[in-house]
Amino acid sequence: MNAQHPDPAQRPEPVNDSQAADAGADDAADRIVQLETEIAGLKDQYLRAVAEAENIRRRGERERQDVAKYAATNLARDMLSVADNLRRALEALPAAARGDEAVRSFVEGVELTERELLAGFGRHGIERVDPVGTPFDPNRHQAMFEVPGTDQPNGTVVQCLQAGWVMYDRLLRPALVGVAKSAAPAATAVPPIADDEPTLG
Image (cartoon, rainbow, N blue to C red; front, side, top):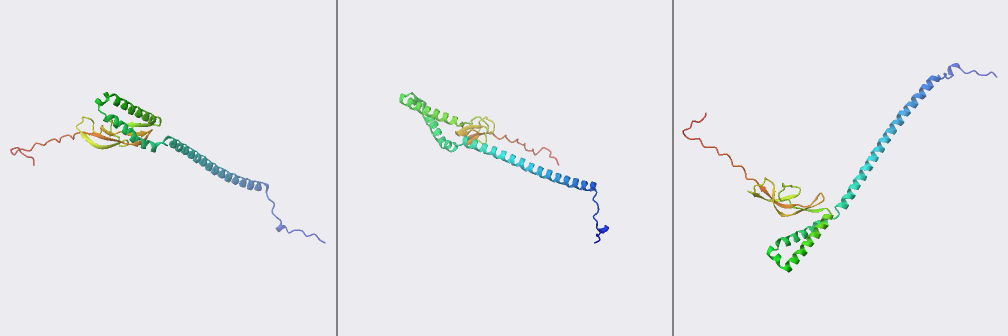
């Protein structure tokens, strides 16, 4: 039996080693670029996730501190009327009545109660706002009326009807105040033109 020789036209062309190496290098370079792109994307996602987690942690910490700091806000508002009434009781007592021993003991008891209440307020950052003599601040004061002829700059608080209160940097109740109103400058009178004076035009 004669061995069949393959047709030279059907023989595969020999592969050049340098061409195969170049093709492999191109594939490897493309793969590296692809992986580097994926790595950069994952790194960006990771950094964003870390930043978001840190923001959430800080926000949660601030909220936790605010809750602890202002937890007594509603109770403080309810107690403001007690402080007001103690102050009114002391201010309403005539000075002459303080000479009586029984009245003096009563007054001292009320003053002691007020001091204890204010000390408790102070431990929680609660302070009275008595703004007489200061410029009107719409964030802390509520103007009830204007007072002309006070010789004070316009907008200065000259009367306090009810003290305001703050808790740290948060307003509990605005102060009810009267503010100074400067007199409007008098309009300059224009003298009338006499009949015998010549007119222009």
